[in-house]
Length: 82
Length: 232
Image (tube, each protein chain N blue to C red):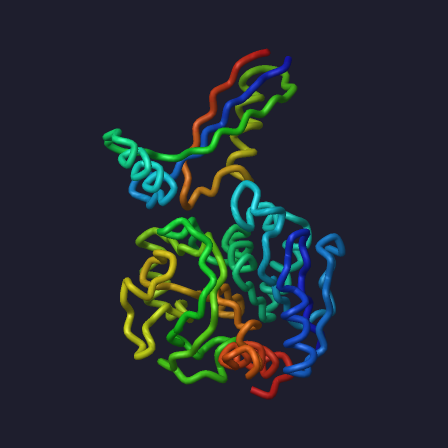
C-alpha cells in the first residue's frame, strides 16, 4: 500500500519563535491585530508499507531520528492511503 | 599527532582552521572529507564552521547523522579533544555529543561581529592557556546561535562547570545588550561532561593572528596542541 504522511514540526510551547514574532510585527504594520503567530514546518512523505500501522511506525522513527529535534520540537503525523 | 578537520559539503572555515593549526600553531593537521568515515590514527578532531548541507532541515542536523560522526563519537569516547566551531557546534549538539540546541537568533538575522567572551572554565583541553575570568575578543558569524536547553540541563551545565565561554561586555559583565543571539545565560560555548568535547559559536580561527585584529582565539588551538603533545 502507498501512504502519504504530513509531518508537522513545531517549536515546543514556551520556546522563543523569532520568525513568528517578526511576522506578527509585520502583520501589525499592515494593520492586522493577530494575537500570536507561530511558525512550523511541514514535510510530506510518501512511502510503501504493509499497512497504516507500519507506515506510522516508520514515520515516527524518521521523526525521532532526524526530522525533529526532541529538545526543541513537538511533531504531529497525519497519514492517509493514496 | 595529527588533527582531523572534517569537511562536509558546505563547510567553509576548514581551510582557515587548517592554516592556523599548521602554519600558526605548528601542529600536523589534515582535511578529512566526510566520506572517509575512519578517523583512527588521529589525535583530535575539529568540525569547522560553514553551512553543511545548506543548513537544510536544521543547522547541523544532516551532518550530525553522517557515518563519519560515529568515528568522531569514538574518538570522543577515547578522551581525545573534539572541537566544534559555529556550524561544528550545531553538529555536535545535533549528534548528541553536546547538550542543548542552537536555534534561530532572537533577532532573526545573520550576525557577523566581534564579541567579548569571558572564559568561565580553564579545566578543558581547549582553555588551559587562558586565565579563568579573562575577557577575550573573538568574532561570531551566525544566524542560529541561540543556545537553548531545558532547566535540568542548564543547571547541570552550571553545576558541573561545563559552560566555557559567555558573551560579556568589555569589563566582563553579563548583560542582555551584549548577548548577540538570545542565548540562555549568555552561553557561547560548552563542554561535554567528559570535558573533551567543546562547542563554541565564536570563531577562534578568525582571531588567531595579529593581522586579524585579535590573537585571543589562538589560545584555543594552542591549548589543544598542549593536550595532544602532552606538554600541558
